[in-house]
Length: 105
Image (cartoon, rainbow, N blue to C red; front, side, top):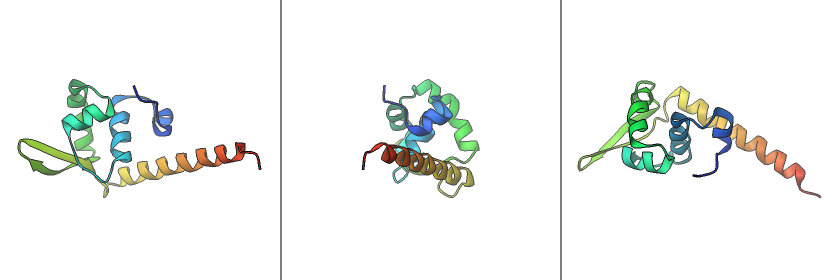
């Protein structure tokens, strides 16, 4: 299992946060549900359970269809998504500052 990111350390290691964290880190691309399940480390059955919440909150949007697979990505126009990304950047900035303070001059 992958090490928790700062985002997951703050929000917890729940399946929905794992999916959101994966999509934030890879927001330039779209993915099938199978890829999202595999790359986020969330089981297919669990992803199937939480997916309606992600769609109803408009956190994810369908981008296109390739063959029989629908592809999805983070909805960058959603205020919720924009705040989550901003928060993720803030966590990273704070952690980088803490780490740089530890380096001797």
